[in-house]
Structure formats: C-alpha cells, structure tokens
Length: 147
Image (cartoon, rainbow, N blue to C red; front, side, top):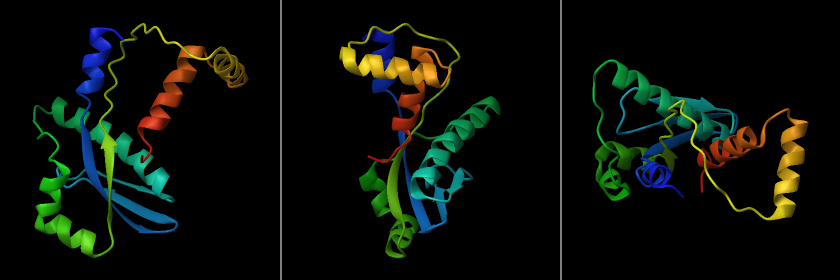
C-alpha cells in the first residue's frame, strides 16, 4: 500500500451516531455534529444514508469556512448526559466512517485470489462496470455497514 493511501486510511475519522426507531423508520443523529441526521427504512439503510449525510455535512461545513470538531471517543460520548438519556430510551450506537471523495483516482496494487477476481470481473461486466468501479462500489458498501 502506498504511503498516500495508507495515510488516508489510518486518518479516516469515524463518528459515533445514535440510531433509534423501529422497523420501517429509523433515524440517525451524530451527537458531535449538530444538524447532521439521516433516516432509513432499515438500520442498514439508515446507516448507509448516515455515511452519505456525514460526507455531505463535512463538505458543506468546510465550504462555508466553518470547522468541526474531531470525533469524541466512545467513552466520552457515553458520559454525555444527552447520549446517556438516548441510550436509556432505547437508542443504539454505530460507528460511521467519514469517507471523503477527492475526485483523484489513485493506483493501487491488490493481490486477490484468482477465482475471486474472475467472479468479480464477471459481476462487474454484468453491471457494466470496470473492475476498479466495482471494487470501489464494494468498498463504499462495506465502509457504510455496521461491523
């Protein structure tokens, strides 16, 4: 992995979000980022939307010249009175990555099992995607999921 790519990965911020709701209607809020919210019909959809909202919120905030704080630790958030109340009322926590889009492609050398690569190429072709576009799509999907 190049130093550039590694430095981007190790510095990727994850913000802790509160997820609340019931089947068919979930909401996500970020205690550290006022006004950054998302919704979804399922928890997975809500968290995927939260990753998009986080990216957009960060972009708009920076474009306006404002700064936003780094993510607080999970321990610090658990001591926050509002977070404590939300958790007591049934909310859950999720770590959501801040994935910034730079618009600058970077070449990366990956080693992948030949059978997996063949299956990926077949699926990419079925979706009319290049191998690179397919790998990026998979990465975006996995980054927005709850581990």
